[in-house]
Structures are given as C-alpha cells and as structure tokens.
Length: 169
Image 1 (cartoon, one colour):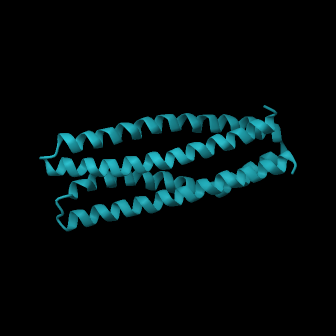
Image 2: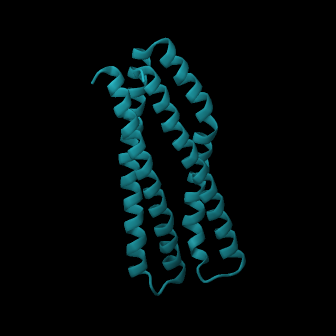
Image 3: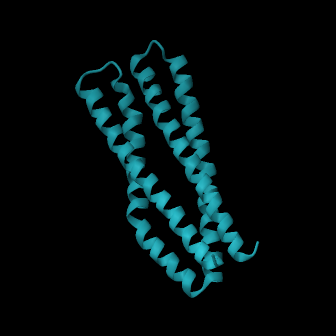
C-alpha cells in the first residue's frame, strides 16, 4: 500500500475510534445524570453521589457531543488536505496532535487528583454520608474518565507515529 493510502486509512482508523469513544462519553454522561436523578428522587442515602456524577457528566456531554458532531467534517477536511498537499497536512496535523497529546497529560493529572480525592474522602468522611457518597461518585467518574483518556492517548500516539512516518521521520 502506498504511504498516502496508508495515511488515509490511519485517518479513518483514528477518527472512527474517536467518534465511537465520544458516543460512549455521551452515553455515560446521560447515564450519570439519570443515576443522579434516581438517587435524588428516591431519597437514597447515597444521593450525594449525584453531585460529582452530574458535574462530570456535563463535561462528558460537552466533550462527547463536540467530538462526535465535528468528526465527520474534520475527517473530510483532513482527507482533502492530505490528497492535495501531503507535507502541509502532515505538518499541520502533527502540530495539532502534539497539542492534543499534551492535553492528555493535564487531563490525566486532574483525573488522578480527583480519584485520589475520592479515595481519601471515603476514609475521611465515613461518618458524613453526603460527603462519603460524593467521594464514591468522584471515584466512579474520575476513574472512568481516566481509563477512557488512556485509550484516547494511546490512539493519539499511534496516529502521530503514522504522521511522522509520512514526514519521513
């Protein structure tokens, strides 16, 4: 397969996975909001979980929706740029992906800090039901976000390597 054809396949592979994960973000966000509503309406002693579930769900809905709905046009533009000017595509996309890749370092740090805070909260707030439940909710959402971002980070690394190969490096 020619290098340009391989790069077109790499674009499809990377962005198809991104779009699938963004759909998962949307579904998890909706499920977390639904769980928050159920916890609150039933008067569950764990209704405090709803605060971090819903707060992080809003992030999941915004990020998931943004990625999901922009991906198709982004892929069309990248295929067109690759077909008309491969070096310009490679330079611009590698620069963009370097920024994306750096963002994952920040996201992981935040998610790990939130996970640690949730774990600490389960020890510190055992006798304070709302804070204890909120800590559990924080563990659920931050660990899920961390796992999904680890998958996304790995995809970004593979895609960036394909771009570097196109550049000859």
